[in-house]
Image 1 (cartoon, one colour):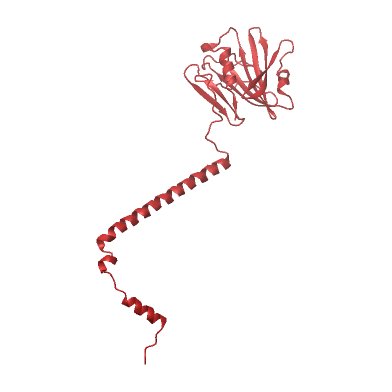
Image 2 (cartoon, one colour):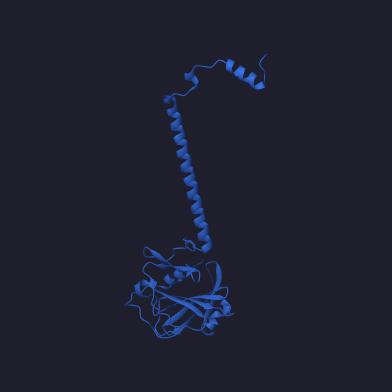
Length: 245
């Protein structure tokens, strides 16, 4: 009997009849395999570097997103101007609670609170800045006292009073008060000045922000210049550097 011919037998017979090239041309030797191993190692190493880099970027992006959700920011309020760097330096006072910043000359500091002062109704904060030394700076008793040639920043509850009318709340007498308009940090504001003593004059700036009023004030005199060469222009430049965040 003839052997049964199936398709598998036919294919096997045809394959067995094909001539094979020498073993050296198709079986890799140890020397020939080394470049392949080296190439494989390099590819694996590059892949690991890419994966680690992607993981690092993903972690940084996640951390940045988490910080943004928490309201954390390392950036300054704004690039504050430096108009008061008259003697080679500045320091920036930043108030995150009430969202403002102000540029001070390098030798200025925050003065101690006035002893015995009772804050008026609606006052939320009062910060006094001075260029005087501790020995030069003295406390004066009274509610509305500002040490001459210092700068005071106050935050008040507005209680429905507009900036254009705040000078009346501030105790400025209509007959002796000089009132005007100004712009601070791109916000419209009002100014007022009036004598508080024969030799002292109060200068105030009012800026309305929502339900709050920001008041900046300083007193000048006697004379045209204060301690350490402070002039009214120095104080005006500090006021003009006000920036809101």
